[in-house]
Each structure stands twice: as structure tokens, then as C-alpha cells.
Length: 370
Image (cartoon, rainbow, N blue to C red; front, side, top):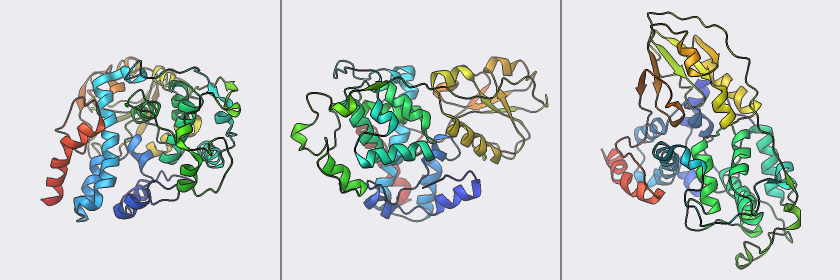
């Protein structure tokens, strides 16, 4: 996909066009029938529950949707881990299982000049569109962490910075899964695997080796040069004043909640809060930021506030703040509402996705059989 719409009616048409059967058989291929809904899920425009209900209404069987629902469950799972562990997800979840030599990015990945055609094209597409197919994300992470011996933190931040669908939990924990710091083994892929799923026919590269030779004992020469990446979010200037109706509640939106249906029929002040401190900790680039601001135009009467929550609160007077729960919102005060989950009753920390999946499957099956 060359571009992602910011029109809410068009987003609903993307949901209506979901083909879970085609998705199941082709999702691992770069040209497969993926949904392209991840940016809207990450920005909170839609929810996994919303997609689940659509699939139920379309009368699919659980067997027909299982692969798609499982992938949606990964997203919920990573969010539950973030809920339970907080900033611990910024560190190795299973410390001591892996040793990394470097912390700086391989220059060849930053410039998209690894010599692996599919990866270089995927990086170019990431810079151009803000999107990378999930399989290519895994390949890129495997090269960075397990071939180039780079600790996952910096390359994970680099990718998050450029993604329209940047979700820190999904991004950081997926990188850790590949790197072996949130799993019991590392992930690697050779040229044959990359050719199969990306449609390239490249041979005689430094990845054109049997799996018994991966990871290599030493870093390939093309990955040895290192670069320091500068990741800063180009936020607008701090907000001086906003207009508040003191008798109305104030709905607080943010980078993870741009839901146009949230209290859509409530008379309320609507504020999109952009906190510099959070974007300093989790920086995003100009493209994802501007795209998010365009998405926010689906919310009538929305005002923008650039500053910290306390500075905003001083301008609200007696207006009550309402916000959605999220690990980045713990310093908010007011009325906290739950986010939408596919299986809201299953909460807490599960050490592995498959423990979580085993817990929610019986509940999901009941919904499809109801």
C-alpha cells in the first residue's frame, strides 16, 4: 500500500473488505492479503474488539478467522504485558540469555544498503510510506540483532520512529522476541526464506547459506560500520491557551487514542494532548506525527494542546477529565475508562503468548458459536 487513508468512512470500508480466509493463506507474503489496519489500531481509531465483532457479524466460523484473530490477539497480549510490566518492557525481559556486542545501528540498515534486495526495498518503503510488512520487520530485526550483534533497543526505536503503526509494546516486544530476550530462542532467516516470502530471486548473498551457518560467528563486513541515529519528534510550539466550556467534561485524546466514536454524542471539550516528555522518551518522526494529526480531524471540535498534562489541567477549571487507560497515561487525573479488548475479562501478565492464547480461545469460540 502506497498510502494510508485518514478518512474514517474509508477506514470502515477497509474493515468491511477483510477476507480472513485469504489472509490466513497469504499473510506471510509481502504481496499477501493483509488488512492494512495496523496503523488505525495503533492510533486507537479502531479496536481489536471492533474487528472481532465485524467477523462475528459476517457469520464466519472460528476456524475461518482463527489465524487473523490470533494475530489480533498478539496485539492485545503485548498491551497486557505493557500494562503489567510498565517500563520494564524497555529492558531485556529475559536478561542474561543473549550477549550483544553493539548498541549503535548498522549503517547499512539505516541507509537501506545491506545488499539484500528485499530488505533494502522494505527500508526504502518504510521511509516513504511509514509501513513495513510484518515479515520484513522480522527479517530486519533478525539482521540487526542476530547477524549484526546489535542490542535490540536502538534499532527498535529507529523502526518505531518511522512507523505509522508504531505501538511501543508491539514493537519493542516483537524485537525482543526476535532477539531472544522475550523468547527462548532467537529468530534468523536465510536468503531462501526471504526469496520465498518477498518474491525476490536473489542468490550468492551473505545470507545465502544453510541455517546451520546462522547466526554467523562474526558480523558480515557490510554490517560492521555503525551509525548514531538522531530521533527527535518535531512537535508544534507549546500551546498558550485553549477554549474550555467549564460545564462540560473534557475528553483527553493522545497519540494512542484518536477514536472518533469515543463519546461521540457527548457535549464535551475535546483535547488532543501532545506531551513533549513522552515524545522525548518514545520519539516519532514527522510523517507519523502529521498522519496522526490528520486522523484527528475525524473528531469534530478537537483542540490541540502541546505541553504536559498538569499544564493542561490548570486551564480546565472545574471541568472533569475523562481519558482511556493506557500505560503512558498513568499520570493523568480524572475519570479513567477502559480500552476495548477482544477478551476484556482475561487480564494480567502471561509469560508467553501461547499461555494467553490458550486462556482466551474458549471465550472466543463461544462468541462465534453463539
